[in-house]
Length: 337
Image (cartoon, rainbow, N blue to C red):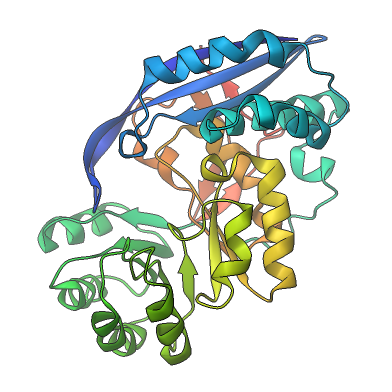
């Protein structure tokens, strides 16, 4: 097996604003796994507010590369169990590795990844298109420029209700709200009823990560599903979230890849929780892997490849929010160059 990392700078079509800041571009690392004539691809976004940078991530990978290349390839799950201790403390890189391994195994089997998992794609959730925080006229303009059936609206300011009222005047689409920990309990209790009346169907991470007791109070009072994001990073967080949220948002890079994500989905279902899968700002390499989880989930937020102008990958496509899988084995993505 040969492993190599390749750095890319993804250019955003418009600045992306959330409570953590604003970005015009996003560095990312594409991992290429080559073995027996097959190539597996994975991705690790370099997210600055997680304390990550390209050079330190590449250095961490190079330190572990030889050990990872020597591990046996018996199954994706078996490889992940061996690789996880080596990559401990580097979940984004572990995710890239795990996705590449899944891609490789499915390609070797000659199957799309969802078929490798024995899943059906007859009924899939529509993915959101995200409208980042901005002044209200700019948010309206972004919505008008991208007609879509489901929007995820980033909120967390004092005029959040007015923003949704303004957006609603321009579309009948479904709204999901991501408050990104920006509300207090009192704000959330006041906002949820009128937001529901405006066609909002779900609220993601309304309160701060530390506000567990307030989240229990809010869950009991909320007429909308509350989905944990920042409060649910890895497998160990799922059970704790069950008492304070109606569901969880799984991000592959936070939990360490497809292997733990599949376990988190099973765990959440056993706890009668809803499941969402989200993404970072990343290319079609990572997004195409996430797409194969769609048969297992309720909500999908995997639009970031639509937001970049220089996608290095050619992977899944979209029509009216519905995923279009490429007629290729594995995750279906190939590099353009």
